[in-house]
Length: 232
Ligand SMILES: C[S@@+](CC[C@H](N)C(=O)[O-])C[C@H]1O[C@@H](n2cnc3c(N)ncnc32)[C@H](O)[C@@H]1O
Image (cartoon, rainbow, N blue to C red):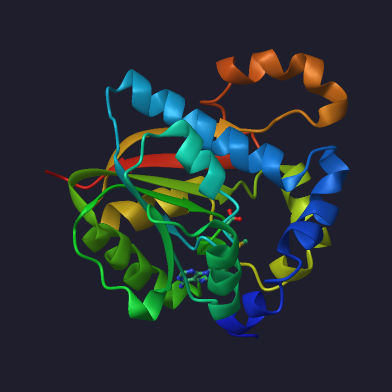
């Protein structure tokens, strides 16, 4: 098994192309999913009157979510951390500025300052025995009352399994079922706010997507989000 930092260093130059090729079966590209994940989260937080001004993208990779996080939230500070040095370098080159910075995770200590931690598609790459440590890092990065949005691939969705089977860097992945993910975050001390499932219909059936908003509580979407809070 390849250590994850080395694995994703290999894809720092072509992450979007490799993932995009696997996702092409759905008729959508990497940015479609990244944009819709962040927009969905932003919609929920707006309704909860939560207005994060600082966010941490945990396992940010090459910075795929950066533009969407900046567009959807009024952030004064956005940081991304990842184990992959090359991914961090790529993200920095493309997106870093006075508000946005990226760090190798070993060089960035949590300081309980972030209003929001966003994390997509990371935990299925973290060895099971190391997941509690990563959750502790996230917990310690959030201010009391801060929000943790954990997005994972839904192994109960056959389309997700098909895409992951076709994705080179998912060969070592160890997926998390929604109940297993919920147990894991509860043990780490997070409070559950809600769970939603997104991405049911492929591009070819996009005319049916309006129904998805009514079905987010059913465990059928290709990805799910656990919306969590660090207790105040
Ligand atoms: C599938 S990519 C997802 C990247 C990004 N979150 C996105 O949505 O495009 C998984 C990322 O998780 C990172 N990763 C894996 N294990 C990690 C860990 N223990 N801590 C932080 N990042 C990790 C990898 O280096 C890789 O960049």
